[in-house]
Length: 381
Image 1 (cartoon, rainbow, N blue to C red):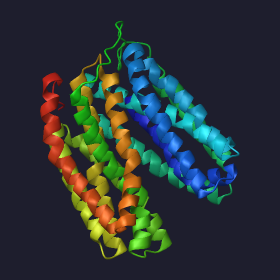
Image 2: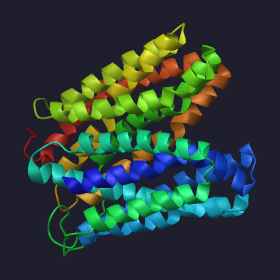
Image 3: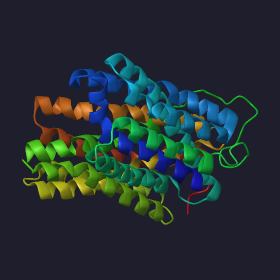
Image 4: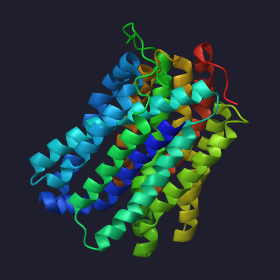
């Protein structure tokens, strides 16, 4: 259980620092907002390119893939701080995205194997540690920035901690047949429709999650005229609620089936999203954002865990890489979709549509439960 939890914590450590240090990256590279937007697209492109390949490598070579891609991710994490133009920044973010996508698949596969080898829920716990690390790293980086620390020292420090995690917690026993097994035969790569079901459902869950993570502060600021400090606290409230929801969800999986947790999570996310979107004051909206974070937090980890259970140990890496690749599309288009709808109507209307998507997640959860049955291993708990 240690490896997935440590891996997700290291992953969250960087992305929490990244959000807080991005203004300094922009200044150091000398790019404007439009150029930064183009460069940031390279993260998603790099991830989409690497994720499916990583699944194949995991199925072929086993647990050794996780510490290797973690170290590569740490090395690439420093590159954006060295960029001096939009071209070099785009190249750095392409590499960062590729290694980030690889690590994302590797830690999810490790968590799924640990979950089903031990018979105990792990995925929500591991994802919860990611959320905790994001909050801690964001606040820590904000403090360092206030003290005048630049982008390079911050990212070097984050990279060093990630490498230490890889060496101390992820590398020991990586080549043994524990956690992720190694298979002598070439893994099958045939795409199966059931993976599309899991992937689309996870994409919808990620869309809800990233929509609120990206737009909650803007909603409080522009729609409800909240004070700057209160508006800026919205993403932290969402992340803290997500961490709480994942820890609670991990405990609940010892008593309820994954499909039941997914239905409840989608329904709670819908209620929170609706409250936040229709609120007439910032404090009510902030409560809704927290409730949305509690609900949506359990959805993606539960879906990924279900996909891993369906696939079985020999194909788990490939199955999870397929599902997470499809799901990542939802993660990427969520904020853009909210922006497009907001431009056409209004931001509250766009965020109200996010509530509808959360209802769809809850409604489709039983479908995922039915398609998971043919290959599912023993139930958790």
